[in-house]
Figure 1 (cartoon, rainbow, N blue to C red):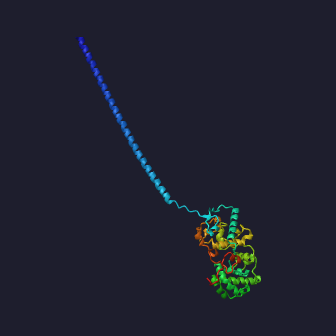
Figure 2 (cartoon, rainbow, N blue to C red; figure 1 turned 180 degrees about the vertical axis):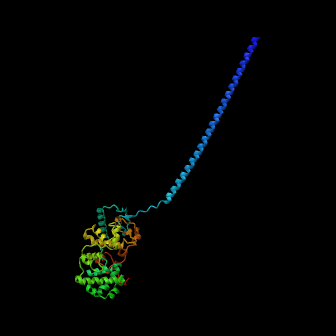
Figure 3 (cartoon, helix red, strand yellow; figure 1 turned 60 degrees about the vertical axis):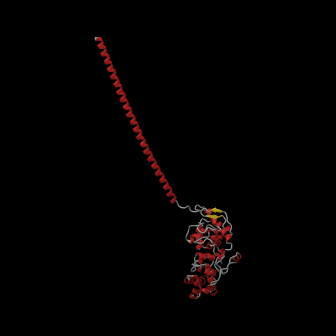
Length: 371
């Protein structure tokens, strides 16, 4: 009896212990489950936060990319807007003389001779002179004269006026005063009246009467054939002296007038602006025997084609050799309308031109009052 009660008590204690262990296990399982749920929630929350951050970062990146694209687009637009128009490169014809005949020649780009060597400059300059000699084989001084006295007087009168106006004025002057002695003794008022059409007639009257007196008093009434003597005459400078020496005495000289100065700088033969320095620079490029004809070729080209304000580039025979090609009219038809004197169908400067000029189709200029 006592044993049975004790066994029962033991069983009961064992059951209680078992229940206690079961409850403890359940409690541990519950705690573990709660921790797992909590951990899962934490992972989900972290993932959610990461997703939100990633989304925010992606949106920010997209916005930055959008702004960069817009900036690039705007910058590109601004660059297109600000980019200057490309300047059209002037192209010169290979042989402009063909243009004068109406043909359409092939074209060649002109390369400015900025780094041109002295030897290359000499070759180009001489080639230009040869080309002009072919175009103007009849080039001559455009002042009418029959002797050195008439030439020196006409050259002095040509300052600040055209050779045509001088040629229209001197016939009356030389008819009345044919020699230095006659002009030296002339009445200034009568000479002024004759020279009035030339402009600056009072100053010019003083010069021609003064040089006539100097010829009579110092040179026996004869025009001297030396440079150092000519420049001593009133109104006579180096330019006038070289005109007289080259055309009346056959002694080479370079005539540096306004046309000559303009063209040699356009052609980049020299950068000098002083006439004496230009004369020296150009003289060094050519043999002395070429100087007088060179002056005629350059001056004729400057008067007829390579004008000061609007050169007729489209009708220029030396366009491929000219670094200034394109400064004037390049269209052949429009350029042809800019040609002056005989090339444009008009008379030349002289009333009595050389026969070679007439044989080439040139026309004499009309006398004063004839148009």
